[in-house]
Length: 285
Image 1: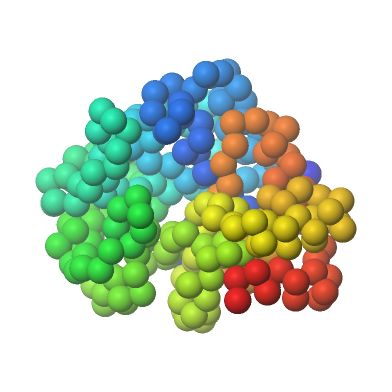
Image 2: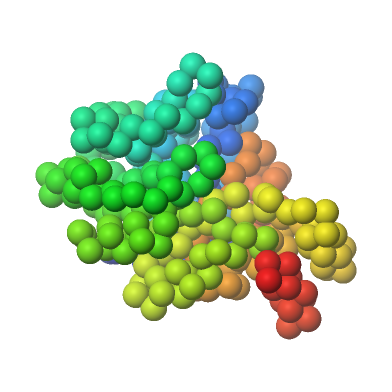
């Protein structure tokens, strides 16, 4: 089995457009260890065996759980594997994600990721902005400049932003090059269409998270109808649609099941007819 969508280049790093998001390997609410540790390790190994070269993670997942699993399952890492991580938020005892974007917070988080992944340099570090409700307006300059300093020290190869407004993306790009933007985007949430087109023209990747969530009953019915017609799952259709939206879209669906991982990869390779695409495009309009 090969991953659908081909590859994309993040700066000087080539990755498969179909990647893997490690967040779901942690326990409930992304807190604590997985119920099935051996199963979590198996998913990571299976992903690499199936050709995935892009894993998305954060030391805040667990916290420190998914990075430790990645290290245990895959270290020493294959030469082709690229690991992207996020900084800018901590975890509290209630499972919340309090912002942590002061310079000292970001330096600590970068070093925490290096330590837990057992790496000397991080391939991609995304600055997480906003909060659990979405992007929030405001300057990212101090935080992003801190990451640029760490990049200049040789601890980070490439930078990106996550949960960001268009203005924040532009502000970051005015400070230093970025290789990706990671925002919520799916069939029902199309607010970044214009941004995706601009980034594609400039060779910057767009990495959607929560690719299926947020449908109201009518929208779910429309998606389910296409899926039923194709004999596929709704997730498969949503992933296939995303890959066809723009060549700079990179997928990072997460799962704790090897069977589901294979299903996602197969589903993302679905062939969507012009009629299918027209029906799906109508969901977010």
